[in-house]
Length: 385
Ligand SMILES: Cc1ncc(COP(=O)(O)O)c(C=O)c1O
Image (spheres, helix red, strand yellow):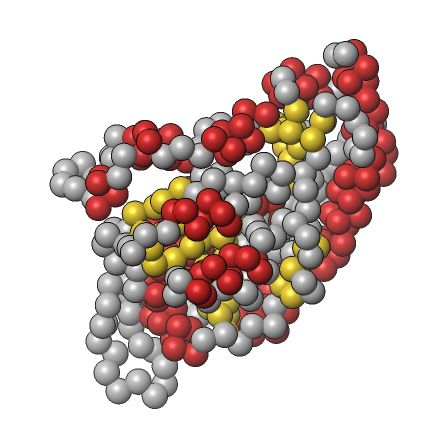
């Protein structure tokens, strides 16, 4: 029996879109129609006023930082468990990442810790909706609004996740999504930013395209701020359009599979299930539980063919040599050098990483796979008593 078979990601729909893109005779976003079509479809799907496509999720986050004018020495509050793509854009702006601690059960930012991290230099909070579970957005938004701090949502792992009935990504100034190969939907690499703010949307576009104003009404195209080249091509957009059409079905099947797994793990001793944030409909990019002796548990499951891994990113991000050694550049100082990251304690994040096991999720997994997984977990629990 082939177990845990992932669904084939790309098929006829993507091929058809690619054919149309190539037949346009141009792959540049202002000359072809695919990037514009993707942006319209994405904005519609997420009920946002604007969507700007770019080359990756990391690029999407960087564009928001440029559009907001995050500058050298500013502080941005971030979580210690995420992908480096959340953090790099802060550093590229010369700004200083400040690591707040996490909730032990949702694995997302703990608003009380965020509040403690706020200083007069704080400009933004980057709320990462880890694994498809929403942050405590009511509290974070209230906190940010009351302190005039911008809230940016990193939804790279949270396509299709909702909070109080609304898509995540629509609560902060920006929502940033990734289409990299491993996300709910993919075009190999790509990203998109959503916002309801007209002026920020214009700046986002400039930030992604060398600060050239290519709008038909532009009188002077000369760059006015430091931007990147993070453009999406027509080929990426073509694939992403086809993928967006599959999103609802992908989310529904992940919700069903992981939702049933979540139910069946109720009452399993010594195993701590993830908490779903109140008001959130989780979109399950992966299923992360906590257990002592995570390596032993994970190895037992792996030996039975269960796709899983222990400890996720291994250690909190501020423990990476980049931060401990302030090693941004070969020479010269980056503003983050003034911060001693060896003192940046996030004990809950550390405990989560020490004890977490990720069960990989996929829309192609079957009912038999679910039975097999639960059987393996129960078998381990009995043997390990
Ligand atoms: C939470 C989070 N933010 C940002 C990124 C960066 O996205 P990309 O790989 O498209 O640059 C990722 C990708 O793994 C992610 O998981």
